[in-house]
Image (cartoon, rainbow, N blue to C red; front, side, top):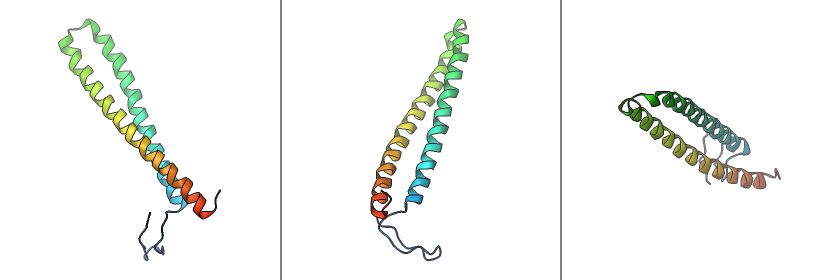
Length: 103
């Protein structure tokens, strides 16, 4: 991957990102995965709360349940995308390590 020069930062043009840059991106993706995972945990708590409403009329709890399910689907889609990004970054990191002699 070609990286343009950034002379204001003192970086010349190069073909690969540094191991440190890639590792930073991996840490950010892992943070986002943890955040989304936390959202799914909150969804579980909400599901338990909704189950308490089971004795109520379905008109009251079904819309809430549908919303929780929709948000959980969005979170799972986000996790899937983050996992793909993480896989790509790990591949890029291995390649960069080989090029920069870290292996």
